[in-house]
Length: 329
Image 1 (tube, rainbow, N blue to C red):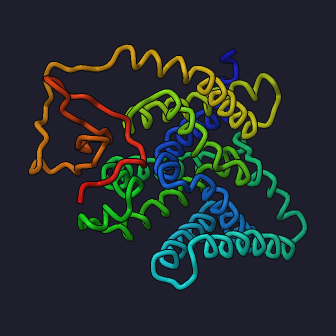
Image 2 (cartoon, rainbow, N blue to C red):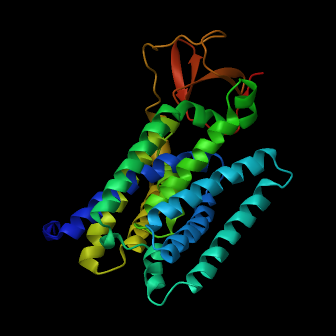
Image 3 (cartoon, helix red, strand yellow):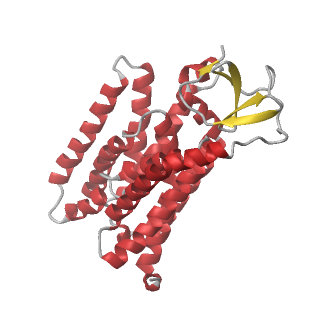
C-alpha cells in the first residue's frame, strides 16, 4: 500500500496534498459563513488568465496566476464596497472576463505551449516540482498564520458585517484580507485539484464539519482534519486505482459529506444527550467583559472564541453560532 513512497514524485504529491488539505478549509470556513461558497470557482477563472499570461510570456504560471488573482480579489472587494456596481455583477464581470482572457491568450500561444492547460483545469498533482513544493509551503504558512491571528475578527465580520463595523473593526481591510487569502488558496490548489474543482476542497470539508459539530472552533478543526484526510487519502486511492488525483480527492470529500449527513442526526442527538455543564467557567461574562453580546431567545449570550457562552442557572452553557442571533446594540 505504501510502495508509492518509493517514488520522489509521489512523495512530493503527498506533501502538496497535505498542504492544500490544511490551507483550503481554513479559508473556506469564512466563505461558508459569508454565503460565498462559489467565489473560489470565480477566482479559478481569473487564475486561468494568469496561467495563460505565464504560458505566453514563458514565465512561471504559478506566480503570474498568483499576482493576477490577488489583484482581482482586491479589485472585487473595492468595487463591492465603494463602487456603484453591485457585488454580484462585479464578480460576474471579473470572473467571466478572466476565463475569456485566458482562452484568448492561450489561442495565441505557440504550438505546444498550451498543452499543459489540462493540468491546471483538472489538476495533476504528480507533476508537482520541488520548486512548487517550496512555493506551496511558504504560501500555506502565510495562510495558516494570518488566518489564525485574524480568526476572531474574520469570524465577527463573517457573522454580522454591520455589527463588526459598528464596533469599530476595519471591515474593508478584513474583507480584502480574506479575498487575498482565497486567491492564494486557489493558486495553491490549482495544481492539486484543478481550477474547475477548487471550491470543493474549500467548501465541502466545512459543510461536512458543520453537520458534525456545534461550534465554530470545533467545525474549523474538524474541517481541517477532513481536508487533510481526503487530500492525502485521495493521492493513495488515485495511485492504486489509476484515477485522476484531483477528481479522486473531490470524490472523497463528497463521500465524507454524505457520511456526515447520514450521521448528523445521530450526532446531534448524542451531543444533546451529553449536554455540557462545566462546573466553572474561565470568564465571567457581563456588560464590561469585552466580548460581543448577542440576543438569544429570552437571554443574552457572549461571543467568545467562536462560541456563544451564556449563564444558565448555576452553570455556563456553550451554544453553536448561527446567523439568526442579533447583536445587542
